[in-house]
Structure formats: C-alpha cells, structure tokens
Amino acid sequence: MSEIEIKNLEQQFNDRIANDEKIEPKDWMPEKYRQTHIRQISQHAHSEIVGMLPEANWITRAPSLKRKVALLAKIQDEAGHGLYLYSACETLGISREELYEQLHSGKAKYSSIFNYPTLTWADMGAIGWLVDGAAIINQVPLCSTSYGPYARAMVRVCKEESFHQRQGFQIMMTLAEGTPEQKAMAQDALNRWWFPSLMMLGPTDDASVHTEQSMKWKLKRKTNDELRQQFVDQTVPQATMIGLTIPDPSLKWNEKTNHYEFDGLDWDEFWQVVKGHGPCNKDRIDARKNAWSNGKWVRDAAMAYADKESDKRIQQAI
Ligand code: BYC
Image (cartoon, rainbow, N blue to C red; front, side, top):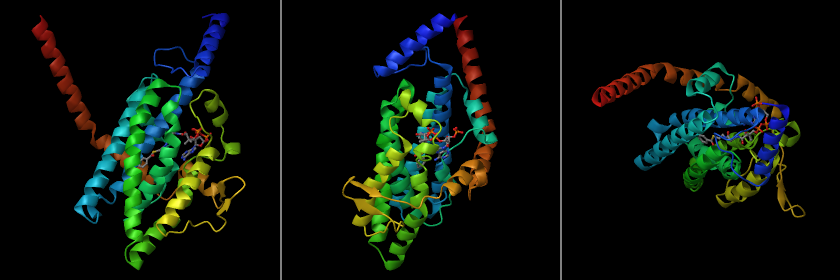
C-alpha cells in the first residue's frame, strides 16, 4: 500500500473516531490501535479470571447456604466476563493460546488488586463493595469505547458487576450491624482493601503512559485520576452510612470543588505488586498454570469430539 493510501485510511479512521462510530474487527485500523486494544482487553480478561481466585478461597467457608450461592454465582460471572473479553480480544487477530501464554509467562499484566490475600469472610464483602465498585466506575465509560466488540461486552459485564457490588455491600452492612467482633472484622477488611482499591484504577495521570493516546482513540473515556475521584466521592458516604471509617486521616470534603480530598496511596507498593512482587503474585500465576495443564485432557477430548463430528458430517454428505 502506498503512503498516500495509508494516510487516506488513517484520515477516514480518525474521522470515524471523531464521529463516535464503532470500529469493527474487519475495518482498517492503525497497528498501534490494534496492539493497544490487545494489551488492554487481554489485561482485563486476565484480571477477571485471576480475580476468581481470592474469592474462591471462601466458597467452602461461606457462613450460610444463601451466602454461598451468591458468592458462587458471582465467581461464575467473573469466568463469563473473562470469556467474553478473550473472545473480543481474539477478533483482533490473536489466539486464545497466545493470550494464555502471555499471562503465564508474565508478559501480560492483570490487575494489581488480585495479588492481595483474602484473610476473613469480611474480605468477600470488601471485594464486592470496593473492588467491583471501582470496576463499575472504570467499566461504565468503557460501554462507549470505540472498539465495537469491547464496548458490547462491557454492557453485560457492567450489569453483572452491579449485582456483585450490592452483594458485597450487603455483606459489609450485615457485619457492621452485627456484634462488636463482626463490626471490627468489617473495619479491618476496609482498612486493608481501601488503598489497593484506589490504586487499582491505575497510576496518577502524570505517571500514566497510555492515557493520552487512549483518550484520543476513545478507548479510555476518563482518566485514571478522574475515575479515582469519582470512586472516592461515591464510596465515602456509603462507608459513613454503615458506620465504618475510611482509613485515611487526611480525608475531607472540599466545599469549593464539591469533591473529597484524599491521600495515603503508596505508589511504591503499587509498582512492586505490578512487577510481580505482591503478597500473592506467585500463587495466582501458579494456580492459572496448573489449571491450564490440568485442563489439557478436556481440551484434547473436545477437539477429538469435534474432529469426529466433522468426519461424520463429511461421510453423510458423500
Ligand atoms: N494493575 O498508562 P496506564 C474486576 C499498568 S477485573 C496492574 O495508566 P492504561 C473483577 C498498565 O497496564 C477489572 N497493572 O495504563 C474481577 C501499564 O503497563 P503496560 C480489571 C496496571 O491501560 C474479579 C502501566 O501500568 N479492569 O473488576 O492506560 C472479581 C501504566 O498504566 C494497573 C480492567 O482491566 C493495575 N491496577 O490504564 C472482582 C479495566 N494499572 O501495559 C472484580 C480495563 C495500570 O504498558 N483497563 N497498570 O505494561 C483499564 O481501564 C486500563 O487498562 C487501566 C490502566 C485504567 C487499568
């Protein structure tokens, strides 16, 4: 293709983005747009799948049948989200095997938040309330992201995340209204999950290498700091309502800006976790690698069955 032809295609592509048109898998797109989407969508898919592990730790210890059923349903939803997202990513020309290989080898990232341990039942409440709460704030704008398959996947994901957030908040509310020991357990979970949940929304805008380009392509519709502020403004009143204290002594309402001021994020800790040195990084990747190798016989059996069925159809057609 000549340089002029490429320039024309780029111009048409930029016009479509400016007009809020969706880009579809067979449309022409700049190579960097394709690669950036593979990076973000795959990272998102991996986060959903790895994100099942901290909660799976509590399935057998849920305090009642009702809680167990709700937790199981939530974890199964996360598996579904991972599958829609892997499928959306495959439309960009990368195979499922390559995506898993990137996760297992450490080439692809997944969300920092899932490298923290789940120590008590209250952590199931804190994850639903705070982690899924932060995820909704991040993902609602992604429903209008420019790449069609990603945007459509996010619509259903966001509906399910709302249920997850409510089930988490309901667990926290019940504990906060319970015995002093139960309330202390809820407060302890909030203390441990608050800052990692804020940092999950990504580095500050001045340290974010991808935001500027991703905003231009309408892959991201809000910056990391905008999302973080929205999360704090939304969540602080919820904590107050159930009688829990946000573990940030500098937190205060600013009447002029109509926003909370907050502090206390440990970015050194964040980058350590992102680089693989968090409390559970090794366990999480080992669990995914084991699931992949233990599932080989299932994949082989499914392929053998598909081949047999295909042979049968060919025989019938002859
Ligand atoms: N953890 O330039 P930046 C869920 C990396 S799952 C690890 O700001 P970007 C759930 C970033 O990749 C929800 N790494 O990047 C599941 C980049 O490194 P690379 C997961 C992080 O992409 C189960 C570098 O730092 N959500 O809800 O513009 C149970 C510079 O960052 C993190 C998504 O994946 C992090 N937290 O913005 C419960 C949403 N943050 O790639 C709940 C989709 C940044 O250059 N993703 N990095 O090596 C996004 O919206 C964006 O990718 C982010 C980061 C806002 C996360």
